[in-house]
Image (cartoon, rainbow over all chains, first blue to last red; front, side):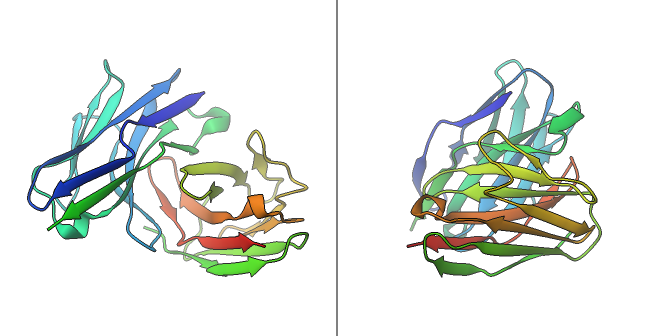
Length: 117
Length: 112
């Protein structure tokens, strides 16, 4: 079984400040890791993912996340946020090894990021 | 990438009735999933919609309550049966593979 914990339900920050959204997971098997973003009144969009290789992955809009296997974490960071980054962010994992769990996503509880001017 | 549409986008239904949600993908996909997002909570997987066979349900979800069809590689439906106010949620379908999944915009269901 897998579980995902997002340690902060809400994160308020001022524009141009750095931000970190924390994600820890628990799994008995190897996993793929994802961050999804849900803007107000919109569907889920994939922000970035870790499949293999470099443990640091980046998105096109300046977010990055680092996979830390020893700490079972996949924290999301951005050095300078914009008003438009206001959204809910979900961390998710899926089973790398296939079987009956193949492709299924287990989500964290979500973190609402609010960027203030 | 895949573009996914869902119908209806929202509905208000009376308890005891059923609602069928449609999910259409713009390309053929092997894997489709249905999720539920209850108010203020995260997404929970309801079932995997398998083309040509019965859906595979997660613990806590049963076929009588959430029957699913998957007639081809681009379309699936989820029915919420005998609804109660506790079924008020956003229902989302997703499609794709193990490396990347795409989500529909969701169906916001309110049961009165």
